[in-house]
Amino acid sequence: MPDPVDPVAPPPPPIPEPETTTRPSSTDLPSNVAAALACFPLIGGIIFYILEKRDGFVRFYAMQSIILGAAWFLFGIVWSIAWGLLTHIPVLGWIFALLLWLLSAAVNISFLVVLIIAILKAFNGVRWDMPWIGPTARKQVDGF
Image (cartoon, rainbow, N blue to C red; front, side, top):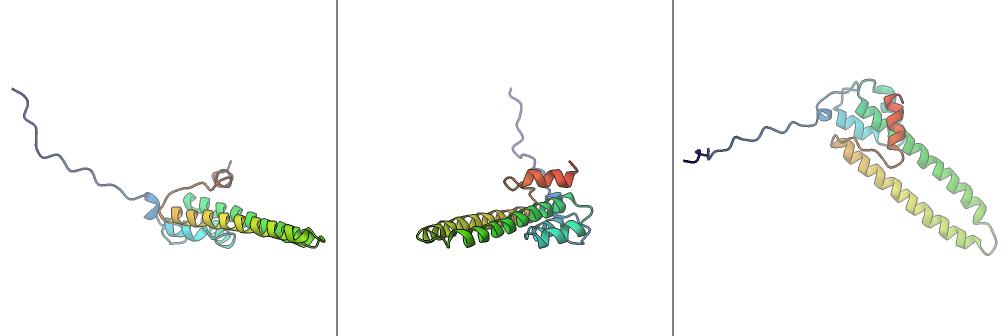
């Protein structure tokens, strides 16, 4: 005779919440909230990188924010210089103005999309490396 099969399967084990959403940071905010706030370029990153001493998750997002904010700021400076130099060229200036405007729009939208993704990932407790920025931030936070 075949072995009898238990018709009632055991319930699945409960799924634990990510640890980052429950562990308080040194700022007394939940880790995911502090990391999401740290994502705001430059200012948020600098504030949370200085204030947060214990939580590597928050420090990682703060360092990414600092690097992203610095890159965005430098792009603005380079764009302003290029705009000032190239748009005043007779006859070709309007072509350069159009090209620079399109480049600026594309780059700024890209920065904004990466920023929104980072905020959402941080708030959900997921450690996400921004393209090109993430590995550098990880090296800085983990101490090379």
